[in-house]
Image (cartoon, rainbow, N blue to C red; front, side, top):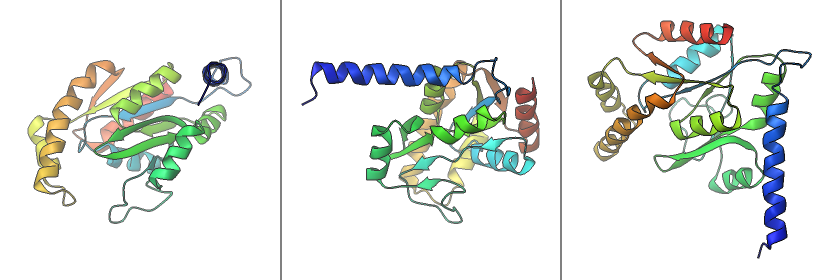
Length: 212
C-alpha cells in the first residue's frame, strides 16, 4: 500500500514535470519555440482530413496519437495512430508518457509527450488532432497552446457525415450523434472556432494562426 510519504513524492514529481514543461517554452531560449495548435471538435466533423492535408502542406509537424482501438481499413501503424494494447496504454499512463489522454467511444487515445515537446523546442509548429477532453488537458499543461474548435457548416451536414460512415452500425451511429450534440456545446472553451466548409480554407487558417 502506498504510504503518505510516497504519495507526497508522487505529487512533487508531477509538479516538477509541469514546471519543466513550462520552462522549455520560455521566450529566452536560443531557438524560438514553435507554436502548438490543438485541433478538436465533434466526431465526424473532418479533423483527420484537415490534419492529413496539413501534413501534406509541410507547415506543421502533425503528432501521431496512441490508441487502444483497432485499425480501420487503410490505417497504418505509426502513420495514422500507434495502435497499442490496453496493457501498453496503461503502462504509458503509469510512466507519465502522455501530454494528454482521454477515453472516447470505449477506446483510449493519448498524445505521446516527448516528441511533441522535442519538435516545439526545435522551433517547429506542432498540430495535435485530439478529442475535446484531451484538448482541455493540454491547455492546463501548456497555457500558451492555441485551441481550435472545428465546427460543421450545419447540424444536418454533421448528421450526413456520421450516417455515411460505413464502419458504424445503427446503434453506434445513434450514440455518436448524441455525443456530437454534447461536443458542439464545448466550442465556448476554445480560443478559436473555425467552420469546416472547405478543407483548404481551414488549413490556411491554421497556418495563419501559427504564423501570428
